[in-house]
Length: 262
Image 1 (spheres, one colour):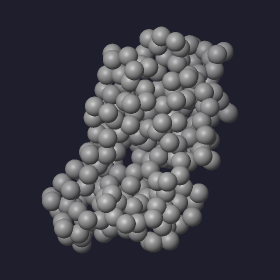
Image 2 (cartoon, helix red, strand yellow; image 1 turned 90 degrees about the horizontal axis):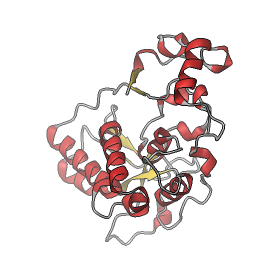
Image 3 (cartoon, one colour; image 1 turned 180 degrees about the horizontal axis):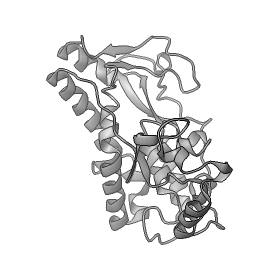
Image 4 (spheres, helix red, strand yellow; image 1 turned 135 degrees about the horizontal axis):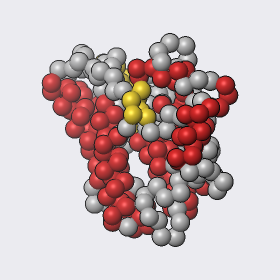
C-alpha cells in the first residue's frame, strides 16, 4: 500500500457523468436488475459481503461501512448497467480475451420483453473474488477494530468491492488495483442448461490468478499521520515534482473539473 503522502487525491472522487437517455421502462428494468445485485452483494440479510465480514467488524462498524458504500458507490454501481453509449457490452474474459459471443444489448432498440430475458445473462464480475477481498480485509484489521477501515485504506477496499470505473487515484498511482474492478461479462443464467465455460464469466472457477495480500490494503507501519501527509503535500506538492495544479487544474494530465471532494 502506498503512503498517504503519495496520494494527494485521497478523499476526492470523480464527478458523476450523465447517464444514458433511455425509455422509462427500459431504465426501470436496468435499475431493478442492478439494485437486485447490489442487495445480494451488500444489503440483504445474507449478503455476499456481510456473510464474510459483518461479524468481524461488529454491528456499528458494519453499519458505518454500508452507509459509506451507499453514499459513495450505489448510484455508480446501478448506472453500470446503463452506460452512456446506451450499448451494454460484455467486457470479455478476465484475462483480456475479447468476448467470443460479441454479447451486447442495444438499450435504445431492445424491447422490454427482450431485455427481461437478456439482462440476467450479463453478470457484474469482480476482478478479485468477493470472499477473498473480505478475507484479506479481515486479516488486515486489528483484533478489535475501532472502525471498518482501522489501519487499512478504506477507499481501496470499497473500490475493490464496488468500483465500476477507474478510481480518481489513477491520476497519482500506477497500481492496477485502482483501475475499474467490476466488469460486465456474459454468463450463464439460472435454470438454463448451459456450460459456464461457454461464457466470459466462468462461475465454475475462482479468479485464482488474482490474489491480494494484506500489504496491498494496509497502511504502511511507518506511514505518517493523515495530518502530516496533507501538510507535506501542501508544503512540497505531490511526489515526482508535479504541482497540485497538475491534479486540480484542467488540461494536461490533471483531472481538473472531473474531481470533487467527498
